[in-house]
Amino acid sequence: MAVVKHSNETQAQSVERASRTFIQWLVDSRDGSENIYLRKFTIKPGGWIPSHSHPEIEHVQYVLRGEYEVVLDGETRKVKAGDVVFIPSKTVHSYRNTGSEDAEFLCIITSKPYTTKWENEFKPTC
Image 1 (tube, rainbow, N blue to C red):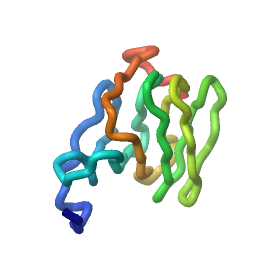
Image 2 (cartoon, rainbow, N blue to C red):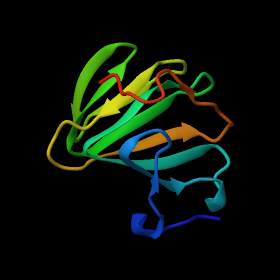
Image 3 (tube, rainbow, N blue to C red):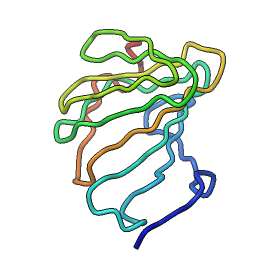
């Protein structure tokens, strides 16, 4: 069955091991999706997600607003609204919002099970 809903109908949850970062599962199996999930991340100013990788999945991200740093296998990139980020499986990545406004991005992943391998549990690398 097709689903139409507004993003504010989905509760934001704190991201595991991150600081001042929230996730909303906009589309997932609860909506009947069998192949893809759509998530929205919000990183508050000064917030971060520590270095990690996902051995089983790749993902695509679209920056909605703000600017932030993303580290991809040791290379720091500054991204802003309108940018697209492709993260292959096994790529170590982290995030830090160094700006003065919320940074938001959409993240699309496959619905298959995956693991998160944390590289450094308590500190971001950005």
